[in-house]
Image (cartoon, rainbow, N blue to C red; front, side):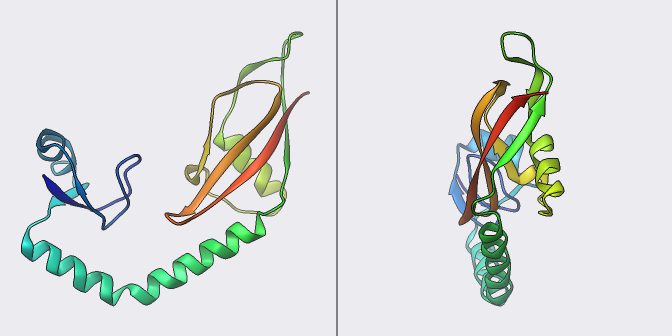
Length: 146
């Protein structure tokens, strides 16, 4: 079943992408929750016209995303966490703490754009920030014991 996404969905696609999904997933989840519409011929024509009209706005959004990614190049973070004697963190380091550390450095980044693997021990890790579907930056960070 071909559908047009109305919003970004992880591991599936971005807003206004035409994707192929299983019919059950489309009819029982994506369409009823307003996350997608069926890709009929008329819907595809409307999508093409909307994309043509928004082309300059999308170019500006991408340029802003590239500028933000360039500003974050070379940034390295150090995040303090309470740890046990063996170096295991009480809790974990997540995107909220990374966003707060970036904010202290003067970079305002939405925590929803940050993806980080599970961090449960002291060490060096990487966080990925996706500003746009084509623009992302990887930031190295180190977790140290407080």
